[in-house]
Image (tube, rainbow, N blue to C red; front, top):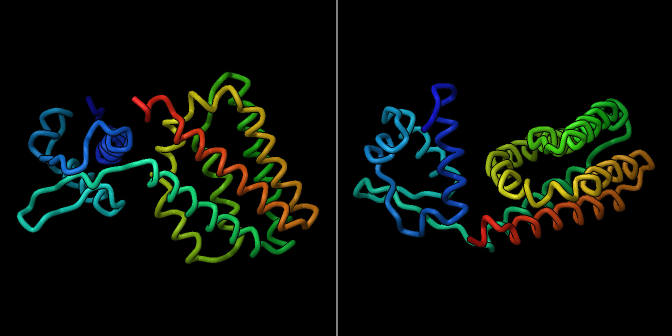
Length: 215
């Protein structure tokens, strides 16, 4: 059942996760009336959610009005993480020393918040994404930031799926974020890019090996 706060966003998150986990197969139809009844909401938010998932290339609208699942496979996960690596490492190469100094404290604050969440055996997905989005925004490249933001929600869902598996390695993951900041502080851009690449490739492996995805 979907609650009454941010209904369309909740429906999007719910359906996106089900599609990625394979609960809907390629070619399966998503019908507004059926989903509305199943989720206990009106058709308007369902229609809005379907439109968002079409834009994310998880659903497709046919000429006859039918909405079908495109399908989601391991290769799609790998492609998404490859995209993140390209966008974020390119961003690191465009950060100048002044923008780094102006944003260093916020990067460290995000890391501190990750550590606090880990203390309570939790993982703060929004803080993780905020850290990476800030790295992209520090490049002062609007187009780059827009491209990253367009994929933010699906990035969040992938992290959510792997949170349980990654929780046991949170200290290592948090240290990886710190290592990236320290490399940037030393103006070792190529080192920071490699650290970021390794970090995201590990995240991709967590996702591809997730028990939920292998069900």
